[in-house]
Length: 131
Image (tube, rainbow, N blue to C red):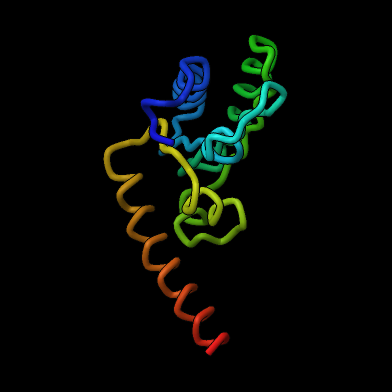
């Protein structure tokens, strides 16, 4: 899925969350990003921040989004350094399937370069264990 295919209400939620938290980037992941969402599917958004103080604001943005929508929105906030190291399963899922909905100029390209290297290394290690 591309950002152009993302429903408008999700784009609006991402925009509001980015503004409320000072996010470096906002990614859609999960069933909506894979194009597998059903009517009862929740919306999974990863908010990448460079200041952990902004994490509280992420919770406030999530509460507001869930009051305003019939679809449930799950916000996950992660520090940019942690995210760039792909230091969680969520970061790996975003690297594989995520759709970037908002990004400060250098945030997305930096993460994409990091994940590309990480994924290549992971696949090489996987192939080595199979061979």
